[in-house]
Figure 1 (tube, rainbow, N blue to C red):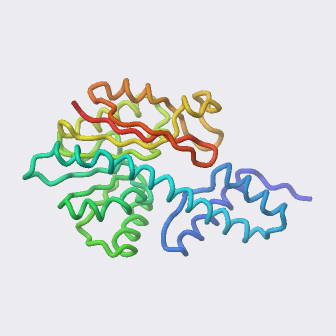
Figure 2 (cartoon, helix red, strand yellow):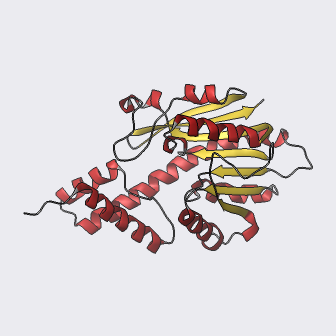
Figure 3 (cartoon, rainbow, N blue to C red):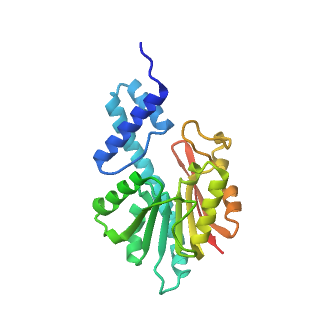
Length: 261
């Protein structure tokens, strides 16, 4: 019996994921995570074919992703009146999503932002993600092209001027900045581009609620999990005004909002 190299298996699964989500017209995940692989194995042992197991796991992931984003929306919506009041009446609201990825946040918030005459920006290092997100938002949701400006760029060198953004969104992005200096510089950039009284929204699994991380990189994912205290220290001239915790799969997400002083 021939053995399959684990890295080859991961490449095969990633290839399948990208192919399937492309057929559905949007990208759900770049690659399956550990719980997805475990669930697929369990479904196959229960009698599902490999294809059936993969389809079921994709459907489960979509439900979980939607649930997570609705929770993020609640935190943002609860602070929305204060957010509006903090802006000058004559200024348009300017929103930046760093690591825009598949545009999950933008998909839900853009309609509300458009009503408020907002200008929205999405930045990602990966050019292919920008293409997928643009197609999903503009062609899939039939939004006007000017609704969101998608750019390829680096979080440590945000291509925006000082005090130019009303809200900066950082969704499950910081854990991919595994270098301490890189992570700190990126947060300095967030503070630089925020307007006074502007907001920084974070949703990410953090260490204190996921003790099994032990502040180590998760095997194979290239991710480093930090604590909300780490963020408080790095954002020292911003005040945390909202924090909630929600469990998704085997992780607990922190959804937190800071306001620049």
